[in-house]
Image: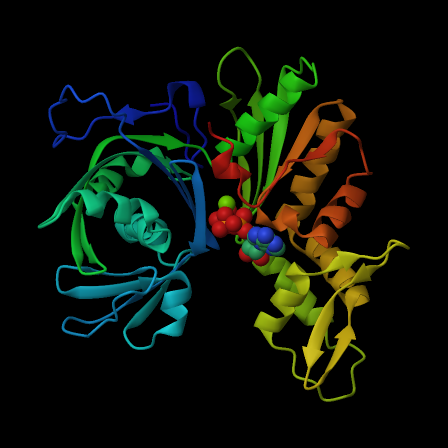
Length: 371
Ligand SMILES: Nc1ncnc2c1ncn2[C@@H]1O[C@H](COP(=O)(O)OP(=O)(O)OP(=O)(O)O)[C@@H](O)[C@H]1O
Ligand SMILES: [Mg+2]
């Protein structure tokens, strides 16, 4: 196994492990469907039979015996316990709320995030259930997991060994026939490789810069024959969009004597919907009472503070400038880069180099790029 401590994998030798309870192969011609999961700290992204899904990485766990509603997306039962993920976790009350990024939940709740992906985009389950009139619906799946360290293989295998749940009054059993681990942002690297090829570039090396909800990550890749190979990944934890929102929240009320309340969630929305004006200034509209105010200038100050005050961010951006000086290309990915102001700010910071390339659909390419 060629993974390093920070989860970087040599993708060519990515681990493929058959689980012990793998069912004997039948002569069926049908290919086993492959489920890709990127359990991000902000959103859990999935890809299955050409359908990309995403839901907020939060889960509500209800105590035994607590009645849960049926017919809700992302609401299911394991044994006698109820669970709700994403929007449903927010709209229902009671029980205990778990977040994707805290308390080692990426691994501890791995089975929940997988079931969450299947039940928030349930067409696949409905299709399978239709074919089995009564009893447990058994489904064979191949599983590809992104951004989990192979050092936790035992725990990962335990989590995916017995996935059984009730959803929409039907019982499902998922048999994972095979699983693979990929490094964070691997789909983006595949997309970058295709971009280089289609533009006739023969770069031996390229870089992926991923701005997620929680982390900001730089991964160099070598572009040899075959699949891209990651090396020496550098990840700054606590430097993603949540951190940018905090710096923005710190700047937002400055100079405001109107007694307005700056809710964190409103500011996050104002950041996510912010835009660049024709004259290059920033626009970010926040709603107060019955009026709205554009605090784009304060968003700009917030971004400056983020890049200046988090040492890891400063160093990472400095590394990227060095990379650009060597004429190597840098591809941008992660939900953070789907926000035009963040994207413009970082591009400016990096000197508007033409070697900085924004990948299409940066919020989902980390997973949809693996094809
Ligand atoms: N379509 C979009 N439009 C605007 N903002 C978006 C969009 N998609 C994602 N974002 C923002 O980007 C942030 C990061 O999203 P992303 O899914 O890349 O994070 P993550 O992979 O869950 O986090 P991490 O990689 O740190 O574990 C989100 O919190 C959200 O603020
Ligand atoms: Mg991510």
